[in-house]
Length: 288
Ligand code: NAP
Image (cartoon, rainbow, N blue to C red; front, side):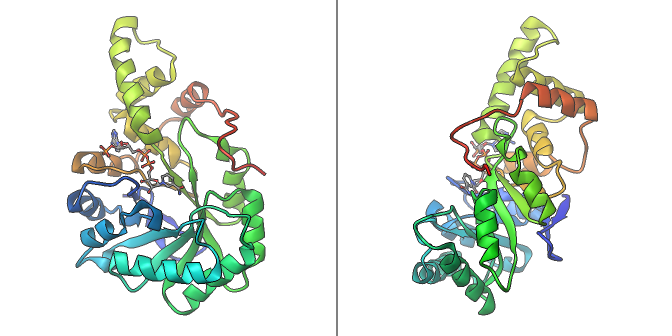
């Protein structure tokens, strides 16, 4: 496993973490991931998987970096305090390594939210403060309200099909020492599915299949990795980006953990760039 600095802290987190939205894999996939060095587990009060994470890390709390989230609809001061208590109980731990605001909510003053987050650090319940689904403007506002601790991370959608953060958010975070936790890095599994389908088509149409799935498949064959591994490797090439794929099986977990520590060539990166261009998706809203 490869590790990167969390924000400006001295904490090192794995380039591949373990997502748990819709996680139903039980104890083994998460434990195997931790054994392989993917010791960041991401959950959220909204996912209802905190207790499954708690079960998986039982007896190995000190080896795991736990990231959870307070729902964006619970970010008034009192609500955050209650949500943090609930998360501790569900996880069966006495502190959260990274506590993230799941999404911005303009109906609650951001100063109130960030004051509560800072107080949770003061009392030792939370080690680091993060956010999720924040654009540049929302990050600026939140950071402007904080007096004691930095925002160390922003968890956002990033994969070959959804590159909107490359417009500005990725670079803003890089300049300001904010780690990006890339969510849905496998496009919910569709990247590897389309590449596998194109693998079959490739046999029929020959090598020069320039469709996105075809290019991903060809590059996978060139580097001797799977399409999912290439997609994760591409996603984490930036120095401040780690990815948190979800895997319900040990096999997928092992595959994902082996997606870093090797490099695509510049030419292969250029081919991926051409096959999966940055688009304007109005549904992805981290902009300005
Ligand atoms: P994802 O990780 O892109 O995709 C998960 C899908 O990919 C599952 O169907 C999984 O199958 C499959 N998969 C995993 N490894 C694979 C491999 N090596 N080969 C082929 N298929 C593979 O999608 P996601 O769950 O949406 O995103 C990951 C995590 O990001 C979430 O679990 C959550 O922690 C976080 N997230 C955060 C937000 C937010 O708003 N902050 C939103 C969405 C997600 P199996 O399950 O069968 O292994």
